[in-house]
Image 1 (tube, rainbow, N blue to C red):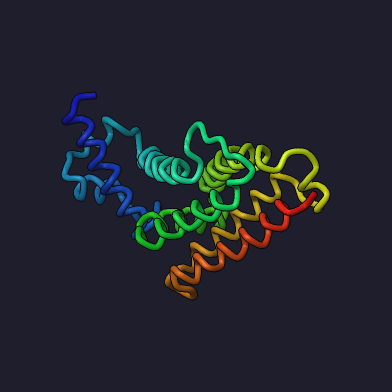
Image 2 (cartoon, rainbow, N blue to C red):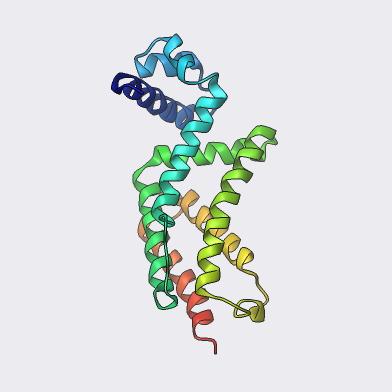
Length: 202
């Protein structure tokens, strides 16, 4: 792809990202994206068959960016570093969502539409969640092998789902009912309470 083409595609995704965050998928038209990207309608359709493909590209790009921060490729985590790893990654995510309301709104809109029963949104949420969960499970299994978790009545998958669910709740409330520092403190308390207890088991 030529440099001019890459820049046009970036402009389209940038305009779409802002539109989908502010207006949601159904409130953002292709005309809005075209106008704010500063490209022709034909240019948009050259890169994307339709608005749904633009939306999926925006969400996938955002999800990959976040996943790359939390679970970088080739990650190998020694058991002794588990606590610090989960503390710092959670806090980094909290900082990103606090500093980037567009990113946060993108995922809020996606979850709202899924909650309203929009099948395509449910499928997208499920796919994104599964991708993140599977990567996180492999890290958790390496850190807590064997039956360390099952003795506590929880599986690796359930532990990951618990962390993701709680982190989602914290992120959704940043600057609404809790400050960023309160969000970080809540995350630190959770990680130290759960992983600290598991790590101290014989």
